[in-house]
Image (cartoon, rainbow, N blue to C red; front, side, top):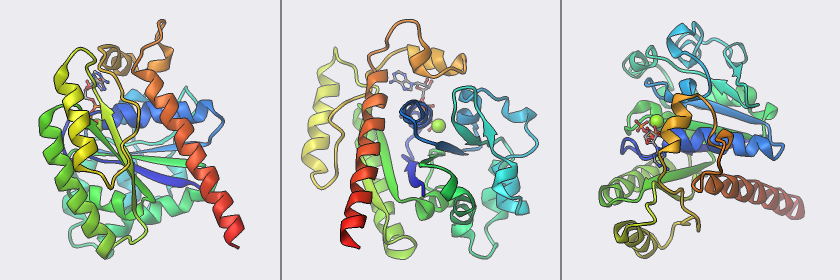
Length: 264
Ligand SMILES: Nc1ncnc2c1ncn2[C@@H]1O[C@H](COP(=O)(O)OP(=O)(O)OP(=O)(O)O)[C@@H](O)[C@H]1O
Ligand SMILES: [Mg+2]
């Protein structure tokens, strides 16, 4: 059964989509079955995975509002990961769901339909704490928080942690923060190192991944070319963090299974 991760941060442009896609491909490269879920009307993940969002007729919108089975919407990317795509239609969903019954649990229901078919399900959120993000947090086992190494990101992280605490209290008591993933780390600046130090000291109770995704223009190029960062001719230093993160997630999953077996 899949472990469900949501990549969330209401601050825009911190690397949520880049992390979702490249982590997904890194997981599939170590023989994991991966489903990515695009929960952002900007549909950057859908584009990155090789599709033209506006050409797609069936997207997550049809699952959310027309009860279409998610298996009929899933498409396979060239790099071995499956995708529940999105497009602009999703921007209407938030409003249309406002008066729907169990409106916070729509994504939970959708994920449950295919949970047995994958090892990992990764959900990419939009930069807001609205109903779609709440749905993702209600459906997830764990949250990964990508934080870009700049000061304003710290404030956003505090707001997100408050929201996660609320969701734990009201919708999903098992939700855990897997860790903070530092992104856009500029090795040349003291500022980036200072942010890592602030993250270490101010969020002691939260796991800070011991590797950073370095800043590199290659990430923007890779999304424009609709190819994972690992496809670049030259090894991109920031890409290694996604390989390490993938290994860490698999290790955590195996440890949880071993623990469950012993506890039986
Ligand atoms: N490590 C990195 N170094 C430099 N640029 C990066 C890095 N990671 C992502 N980018 C670029 O920064 C921009 C924002 O990244 P991305 O779209 O992944 O962020 P996001 O958090 O998903 O944004 P949004 O909040 O709008 O959904 C993109 O152009 C992306 O290519
Ligand atoms: Mg994004």
